[in-house]
Length: 110
View 1 (cartoon, rainbow, N blue to C red):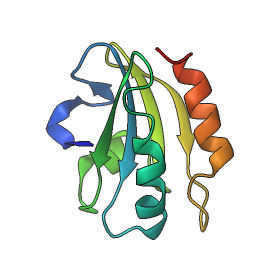
View 2: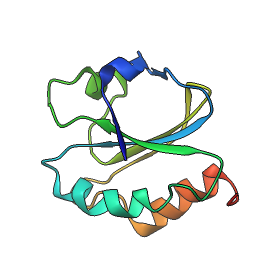
View 3: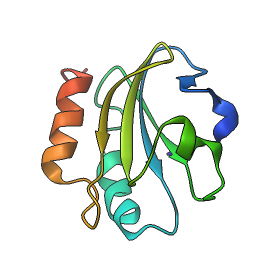
View 4: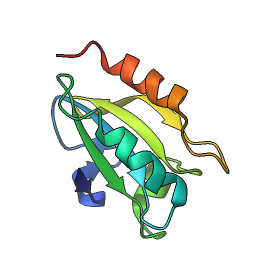
């Protein structure tokens, strides 16, 4: 999964066109490590791309730009604009039902 650093964004806009599901994850987060392989299974099943918004560095400007309080958090971007968002729950992360909601928002398989 491609890692996106802060320079891939312009404030809250993704500097890419098309539909992107970006999971904001940190290497040190156990909930992120559990979620990442489940999120990666979305790759190639639709007309969208997936990536990791890397917030491993707690000083990353992405924390503030997106108001991230809990990780993992997933934001779906359409032509750079953020839309649908699903935030992890403290002490739980993102569940299978959260992943199903993300998948539903992305549309039918290709």
